[in-house]
Image (tube, rainbow, N blue to C red):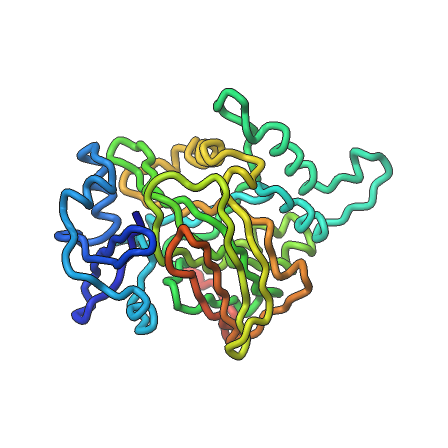
Length: 331
């Protein structure tokens, strides 16, 4: 089942649900995906079962809603400060080669010749999928911001004036809510664009944290249930209405060096990320970057990410912020 959020003619949030390839219909009595998820957590029922119990009403045209700009992020929080955008890197087979080309280090010994990126990737290969299904090695982890940094499908990803690059990262994200007792619950999985500044990251790996504090977009639809083991999609950049760059992207555990459970554990092991009522959008990484192919994006370019299992493609134009200077005042 796929679920999404749209605005109706009266600018009221409506929740839509559909089976893959089918027509979307309004979920009766659902105020938001967030409220549905909390209700499922509190009642102990599965989200899909709760939706079926509520029943489906009128049919809606999601593609028309997308064209009108009525598609919302598929989950939000009434207080954006309680939605967290985070992610992991170097988790996909092949991703280390792309990252390593950005972080060259000249040392003498064979061990020292490995960049930190390659060392981290090797740790994942050796310990990211423990045979007994237990806890494996922790991955690279980063923070992208709170809900104020989340951009709805179709809305522009805005690159800050101080950024050196504005590059896409086509990824799968897990969507989570935290129950009243601090228990994390997974709502499902969605497409995401983990918008990043790869030039800044390449200057010095210690600037990785700076390079990740950017907008992100996810959706338009959430896939309820397990993540397919082998996800095959396409990431592309459109310029002047034509495909300017395009590559396949692979995800799912068959194409990863970590299990989803391991990535989830190493995020939610921190008590700060188990606060009741919070929402988490956690991105699992990628091995496909236009930056590695020498692409520099321009204002007006549109990023498009699609994979059959996730319904509508995720599209966002890119914009560049007007330069500003921030000065702190003493009280």
